[in-house]
Amino acid sequence: MRIATWNVNSIKQRLTHLTSWLAERQPDVVCLQEIKCVTDAFPRLEIEALGYNVTVHGQKGFNGVALLSKHPIDEVLHGLAGGDADVQARFIEAVISTKIGSVRVVSLYLPNGNPVDSEKYPYKLKWMDRLIQFSRERLALEEPMVLAGDYNVIPTPEDVHNPAAWVNDALFLPQTRAKYRELAGLGFTDAIRAVNDAPGLYTFWDYQAGAWQKDNGIRIDHMLLSPQAADRLTDAGIDRHVRSWEKPSDHVPVYIDLDL
Image 1: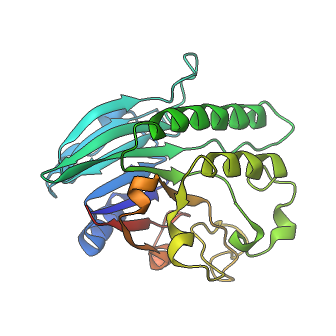
Image 2: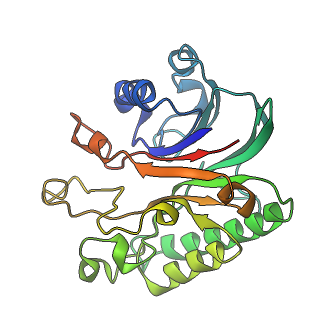
């Protein structure tokens, strides 16, 4: 089973990119972030025509996540537990069922947190605490699970082209990285680093200052695997060439292959 994640940065603007990439990569399951539309405005018919089931947690103009699957989608949950007053559409969970087994998949869009001296950074840290609690409970089920999405976290200096430029950014602050390590320390495996420890493995290049042309990137889109999923990992990769397409998202897809 091939599972992928991609922050498309507006599904309306990137629908052609998405359909082209789906035809090229042929993922079984796709986690999308920043669809930037309400649920009813998602181009469901175009995606279903390609053989995918669709579930969406949308929000007008901002955020928004979705799951696409060539297999049945069960037990769908919209919204991360622990935030009854939180109206931001950043989380969707589902169980993907096949004839020989199932995998629990989460598409998440973790808050950016900038500027750090605003209410946005405490919100980011509290959201991460909620994700840690959710993950602790789900790991107790001892089943294959994938937490995929735009984490807005640069885990290590090896995951950024120029670490010095990010020392005061919410994505790279010590508190942010500590929360990410706490999450991973519950028992998750970083799929990309499990198969490749090379430098320059980036998933995001800003639109400004020629970041793509200079390869001034960061790795903030991650796929964390439960032990039961990590045992089935056969490959993982980053489709960085998608960033060179005309009017691209500033993120590129990340994918894994699981022997399910």
